[in-house]
Amino acid sequence: MNAASLVWFRLDLRLEDHAALCAAAERGGGVAALFVLPPEGDQAWIGGAASRWWLHHSLATLSKTIAKLGGKLILRKGDPAEQVAQTARQCGADTVFCHHIIDPAEASRLNRVRAALEKTGACLRVFSPNLLADTGTIMNRSGEPFKVFTPFHKAARQLNVADPVPAPARLDRPPQAVPSLSLEDLELLPRHDWAAGLREHWAPGEAGARRRLHSFLGSAVAQYPEGRDLPGIEGTSRLSPHLHFGEISARTLYHETVLRTETAGKEGGLRGGEAWLRQLHWREFAHHLLFHYPHLVGAPMQAEFAAFPWRENGKLLEAWRRGRTGYPMVDAGMRELWHTGWMHNRVRMIVASFLVKHLLQPWPDGAAWFTDTLVDADLANNTLGWQWTAGCGPDAAPYFRVFNPSLQGARFDPDAAYVRRWVPELAGMTAKQIHSPGGPPASGHYPVPVVEHAGARQRALMAYAELRQNRNSRKEES
DNA sequence: TGAAATGTTGGGGCG
DNA sequence: ACGCCCCAACATTTC
Image (cartoon, rainbow, N blue to C red):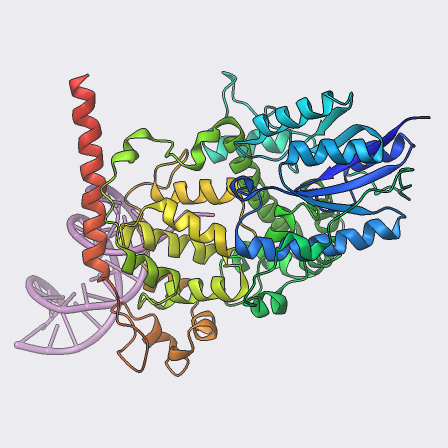
């Protein structure tokens, strides 16, 4: 008979397709489940305040489903090395199982956990992160990571995606009971309850994730290639927060999508399914890149961007955060984010371009706000997304690509339903007025534009030209 | 996973 | 009938 096992949950808050849990259950000898809330300096992989709200509810549902199988979720907070080792010792586990996460601090963190476990003679077994393919398996011919999406995607599509494994039928508790904090002790919920909008829009947890997936594959996926760009309708899957916390695995998403769009025979299903899987591969791309280049979290991939002539301005940054820039699409997006903890992807590109190019605010400031307010705040996606926008990342948007918020609005929110939903000051205006190139006519309490579009665009182009000039002259010197 | 500036074409109004 | 101009509409190029 094997000794007990401890499953250390992190960004894998599910029971289906959970390799670590299956491996633990197969050993017999009892399984304990653990979640450790790390100290504040080690929470980059969780996200910010909105993500902590999500995490609270996700842990609540995970705790219930584990209990249904006969097990118990132990909650702790503090240094993971200490907590994991202590819990393992208390429940008599000789092996700890977990999944990798993509985070620059991961390697040293796991080394510390491993070292702490070895002192008591226990060992750590680490399974693949929540991705379609293992990091390190998608490389170009010279054995380097792909830095451009299209060839990455082409190579990634060739690979077989492993089949999901079913949840264990039951979880026997280890012989020794182990003390646990209560969920409230983790203090994940905000002290001042601003989460009403989040509660209204989301159902954290594995069951909620499966419902979203099935409702998406049942309808919106067929129109996904066009619908995904229209923030006024529910054209996207809205699975990102579920995926971030691993409430559903990427492999499950892949296989269910292939199954339901290829065999359902639904009009447009196949095309929509492929377009959607392409987006799943963007996530894959970001995670593989961050795995290979962990320094990307704080530093631009292209070194010369360290000298970018930002014009840091707290008032402009605050106007952007609060959705008071005077640009309807930008403000609608920022208010949707504030209210729901989520923003439509098309609009994320618009607001990010606006902050970086129109306002010349440093992209890490934008990334930090997204981290704090998004329920799907994800280190890899967020970092690579902002670097893409700023033009300083691998496979970056070209420096001259400046989104025009009015044009984007006219194109992707033609009836202005999205703007009117989130910017009530403009509810009485026509779509033409809302998306007019000069901005909506002055009225009521809606702010006048904080910058003028054409001028701001020129200023951004000059800033980027200056950067290129510096780079070129430095080349000549050397 | 843009937008603006510039270039080209073709239809229609008009002298 | 003809040439001229205007200007959409579309294509190309530049940022």
